[in-house]
Image (tube, rainbow, N blue to C red):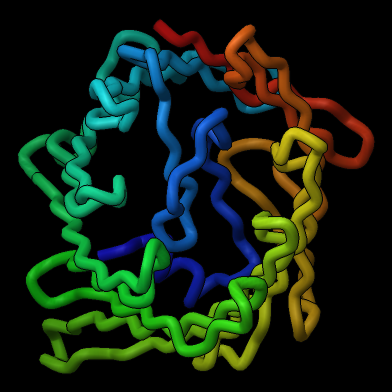
Length: 266
């Protein structure tokens, strides 16, 4: 089951910070709500991650196929393998399988997420995600205003073995685009009757410059982030190699600059 989804339902003011490669030079049609990029002329990507205060020891290696898609990611803490995930794609370079073949905390378990899509031209209008035998999510495009405003409705189905009933959670996503860039994403949680508005600003090269989150109604307690430096108002800086790929990634929070990750491409 999607633990992050459960935590968002139970404790909406806690945000878990994860480290990943944010953007790369060549963007393809994005899998819904995820960055989906190609890395041409690359065999693998090695990333080293920091908690923003000098701590380290976490790193990853991502293997890239001949088209430029990431087909395997291994995460490490020092020399210890922590997890391994493999990916398969359809002809439009969207994931159809996301398979966690190893988890340090549960080494015998294999988790497989399966995806199905329906397209209208190059846009995803329907996405089905199979999480387990009884758990799944369905996302459908319900409105499209000239490709500048898209509204998707998600239904998440979670089976409760104790009660033998399936809980259904509904979320509405309103996406606003300008010059092909996502400038606003509104997430309306029907169960919580709450809205989260994420606003994005960009550099001239289309890299994300700033991300601002507004929560309605405003929570009694401010959101707090675990796993690394984070804020509802973050800015970003990057250092690039000669091919325009990110080699250093920084966050700026309340005027303080944190080194989050460095990358090497081969």
